[in-house]
Amino acid sequence: NNTEDREWRGVPLSSLPCLSADNLNVPDVVPSPDHAVLVRLPVSPGTVPLPHPSSHSDTWDQCHVRMPCSPKSQYPKNKDMVVPRWSVITEALSRKINSVEDLERAVLEYNSRYISKWKFRGLHHLLEQEFEEEERACFFNKTLPVMVQLALSLPDLVTRPPPLLLQGTTHSVTLSQMQIASLLANAFFCTFPRRNAKGNDTEYARYPDINFNRLFFHKEQRSLEKIKCLLHYFQRVTTKPPTGTVTFTRQAVLPRDVPKWEASRQSLPSLHVSSAGLIEEATGLLQVDFANKYLGGGVLGLGCVQEEIRFVLCPELIISRLFTQVLDKTDALIITGCEQFSRASGYSSSFRWEGPHEDKTPMDQWGRRLCQAYAGFKVIEGSGGIPTGVATGNWGCGAFKGNPRLKALIQLAVCGHIGRDLAYFTFGDQQLRDDLFTMYIFLKENNVTVGELTQALNHHGYRGWSDGSDLFQYVCHSLGGSYDSDTDQELSKDSADVRVK
Ligand code: AR6
Image (cartoon, rainbow, N blue to C red; front, side):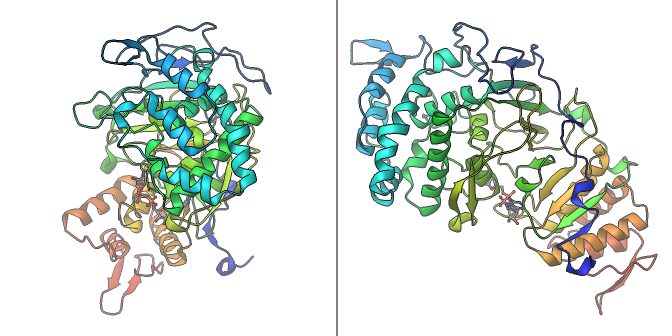
């Protein structure tokens, strides 16, 4: 069909290499000092993986998640007596919970320091005012009791604490979806110790929040919609246990391994640029998370943009917050295998939960869905197959107020350097789609390398051309094109017509 009528430019999306049974561009799941596999291998398709080791083995130190069920987690019952905190948790959650007040009371029994601080106003509003009586009854009588069981099965399901993914290290953790569900149920009941205290000198100051108390506080509609996504997730995993696994890989690039971008002689990748479609719809590509350095950003607060929305549609992503120390500039987190449970519409304040999503993405032999969410583009060592294309968009250009034209060219250069194709979703912006495509044609026709493009971008920065509106014009000019600044008429040296923006 006619290019002008299409919502996309460049190569068709289907031509980009993607994850599939024929292209397993993911590393194998092999236990090693750098890969903690908490399930027993091999896993058999369609059955819930068994935990590994088979009986509980506790570790309570600074390199592992401090588990709520560890006997070392103590709680001052009164002035004179300290008891295992897990026994207080078990007792509090084993009583029948009929209302949000009951839930709040139970949670505060083992978080008594926060009695005057935590208020589950949002959860109250949703369950007691927005939900129909039937939905409310279903939650308190059916879903919640099974969620309690799921949370209290933690010592049987997660038989050793996951290691912390520390800054500067390359390390993976593989968990079953059911183990994640149990950990998330604990986050829902706010059982994780040492994760509530604030302040720079606290043990977990450099980790994201994990207990859900903050999410339950907010009454804004977008927060209630996020809670709906999470309640739907719990309803699903408590009625039909998921059978897959998920691998979380923290990948650190050492300073000496950071590419010399300006010297790169790689050519630019193939480009698909579209004003329609969303990153998460690009099945099989590496789906970029516009991440906060505290992974998940405001997912458990008021945040409701790309990252937070992705995290509530695929709640297993949230568990990365339990063990991922704040990301550094050259760190990436790669999550392979998560499932999407919900559908949604809108964005930010118009975000709405729209109902269940059946995720049909196929799995690999370890039960991981062939879906990867990336906060970084590097190919993981040990991955077979052809590097899959990257699905991305206006990274850094919403909450972080960056310039989409600059961010698009940076991502184009990075993909070129590492040999991945690029699918760029402009989130409805047709002008950006057309400008980017025209710029790309100019770069390709002039055989501009990654290094030359990077030099032009860096030079632009040094010269203080910072408002960005003239970036493509500048890049074109500095790479040998010419333009007439009076008429805004842009001509490349090979007379490609670059529309000026
Ligand atoms: N698919 C394609 N493009 C999208 C999508 C999507 N699903 N969602 C949004 N966009 P933003 P940032 C486009 O603001 O500036 C969070 O709190 C849309 O044009 O999420 O990097 C994180 O935790 C949007 O304006 O990314 C961080 O703290 C643009 O992408 C912070 O925000 C940028 O989306 C990151 O902010």
